[in-house]
Image (cartoon, rainbow over all chains, first blue to last red; front, side, top):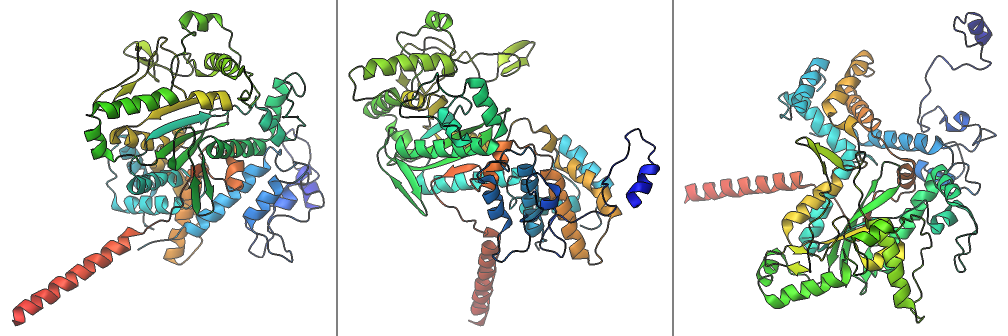
Amino acid sequence: MMYALANLHDSSQEGGYVVRHSRTATTNFGQTAARNPLAAAFPVLFPYGVGGIESERKVKLSLREHAQWALQYYDRRFATHHLFPFVLFALIQKCEAMYSARLQM
Amino acid sequence: MASITVADLRQAEAEERRKEPISNIRVRALWKHVTAANGRVVGSDTARARYRGMIWGTCLVLGGPSLWLTINPVDVHDPIAQIFVGERIDLDNFNPHLGPDSSHCAENIASNPFAASEYFNFIVNTTLETLFGIKKQGPQTNSKVGVLGPLKGYFGVVEAQGRGSFHVHMLLWLANTPNAEEMHEKLQEECFREQIQTYINANVCTHLDDLGEQDIKSMLRNSELPYSRPPDPQQADWAEKTHQLECQLVRSQQVHTCSIGTCLRRINGHFTCKRKAPWPLSDENYVDNRGNWGLKRTYGYINGYCPLLLTTMRCNNDLKINTNGADTKDVAFYITAYATKKQNKTHNLSALMASAMPYHTANLLYEDIRERNRLLLYRCINVINRETELSGPQVASYLMGYGDTFTSHNYAPLYTSSLFSTVRQELLNASSSLESHESTR
């Protein structure tokens, strides 16, 4: 309903979109209550939206290990994706920056 | 630190542009914290600057490095790289006319940066192990005599070219080398100089007898010399084949061609090559008593190379021998100064931090001042790191944990500031107890 209203009020020449982005930003990190959005952001790579990075699973899998698994996956869809490795790397950089940003006296 | 304003950072930016020290003490504190924290973030320029400390530490333990080597594997033409992409190629009975053609190979590599980084990591480690006879296994480094003699250690820093492929600059430590002082003394002896000359003759080359300037100009450049297996030494025509191959490779890989886009810089109105080509010609090899050395060179545009490395890996390489400390220092700074070329955006850190500041002051999340400062640090680091340009293979190799170095040793940081403060405290205690002792006497 909200999307439909937003499309009605569209003043640009783009036409309407079936799905629009939410009005609140989502968090990058999976450790908090919110889920890591990578599985939802790349439907080509995660066709069923499950098994995403940092999602709930029985055996704990770190971000880095999961990244390495993805790059070595047999059909090379993660390795040859034009964006996915960069997004993952940026995520790891941000995580590390978050851990190491502290004040030293 | 919470009181830093955008104006403070703008002032620091101007100072940094003038290459002056930053006057504002709060900005200096922010700087210090940002660089300290960023050193722990993978792929940042600050993390790279830490390699200087590692090279320095290795020099303290092993003495000065004896060799400086650059290897520049050709990933787009090497069939081994195609195997990593997933092409089926029979390397034992290799036929260059079968299989993917060169544009298809290049496409394969460009679309799969992960394979490019795997290939590079594999080829450099294999070269170290098979040609140089040095292998790192966990915490241990085993070495036997390789083509460059017995090695004690290596430290290689990976750089990316403009098109994203890798090359590695490597410092090599030979076993049983004299230290700088002994070297200086020994260089005065004729027999020692002759020994160095024999070594140079065997390993570095800038000249081939039947490859003069005219031959090079008439020969066609063939960049597709793809098969990475040297001629079979068991066969009778090995020497001849190797020599032919070497000529071909020197023509294709080691001849420097100046052009305006790459190396020519305008100095005093006329163009000069920044690599200083054409290099000085010489009729014979020499080593003088100050450690300067040179090679027979009859055509000024052939870059020095290691013959065995050239015929085995079929790629551009450059080997230099260090005889004094000043060279070592220059090399160490050169290879740790940047991760990729052309990173002009990250030159002025204060400017970047200034761009993060308005957002920070507009979005104050925490009441607690320490948390707020932490967030400021985090935002500054992010704004710096997001400006660095990284190529696909670099990202893949960071993700896979290969990093951007090849090291023979493991390094552990030593936090000297707390050590020094403890020592200082102990000294103060000792001197005060000494004084009290004196006064009671």
